[in-house]
Length: 380
Length: 134
Image (cartoon, rainbow over all chains, first blue to last red):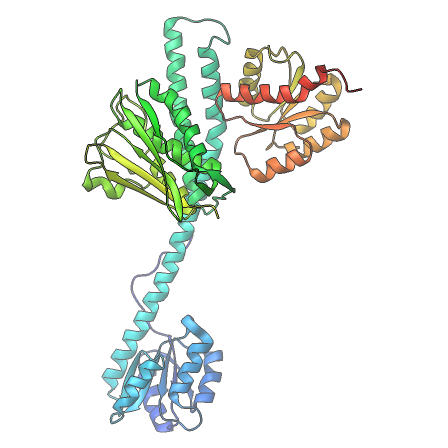
């Protein structure tokens, strides 16, 4: 990072304090105490003068007498808060010892603290230091948050660029290996074929990782654009069940759709929602033993619709549940036929579903296995 | 064989040209020309008059959209298929509006690319075999 790191020690010297009092002597006393502490002081003898001085002096803190001719301290404070909002410097009211009601009203008007006259120098210095320190810490925190969110955005951009540049070469490697394995450039020995298939498998899983990283970068960078269309839940799920059944057949597993009445329509980005359905169904196949039957159910109510996938896997251990939908949240369960997992799939699903204002959840089934359920608002 | 015409393949990345041309040959296409950017593609297009152009979107010197525009100026009936990696909706819409016949994601598996290509060929050339309407 180019930005200087924040200095953890708090130096309050040179901080600007606006002291407001119609009593010249009070101003002189307080000015003396504070200048001695290294603060820069500006003085105003009325509420009106204070509002003017605030604009030019831009103080870090305001000491405001309550009882003044013209507009009083409370009104001055409210005006400052209204004008400068969150950026307004903290206001400490100055009040006579007997006026206890003033204190309450002062807090209502937006003051952070109060000082009573006659001043006790040590109290004045301590209270002012506390509020200036608080203010400085808040500023530093804001700066730090800004730096961190910029660094995070840089990271996402870098990740996106990196993944993007890796994609094309990787897809060429995978495609060329696949064509070679199909004898597109002539036959080969068993060993050569084995090597080519290894290259194909490795580039395939790397491409998937790169694609998922790119998805994460796109979503995290706020660049996820949804191309929403009214879509039938049944249609989108049926298509995915059909395609996933080919993969499942390799493990002698089967995906069955539980028929339901009705064809609920949802308003979704079809490609993105397909990605969610594909991912959840392929996870179910991946984590269920060979020869399993995976059930897919369509559900709907008055406001939302979606689907649920019931697998025959080990279920989600309670202690790992919190990691399930997080980036790289790989759990202890392993795919049952050596399939690959990037740990990003469900995190991406969650982000896509949430972008549709929907929800994704998991329940362990009493008969074993887990049920992943996705709901999104109905198309209206 | 899906197609007995010739194809001009335009992409700045040599490995993509190698992959797609091998795939095309695998599918039975025998006459394949290649160009690494839009400018060279226009030269080859005029010299070889290919039946179809497969055109990358992001290229140095002269990008795909600009090249598509120039090709359509040379020959309004030119059959151009855009090659994309990240399907950017806006770019695809722009290409289609300019007269691109289809777009193919070059990061898709070979069989998917083959399928998309066959579809495009069916759509753009099959109808020419039919007798012209009276």
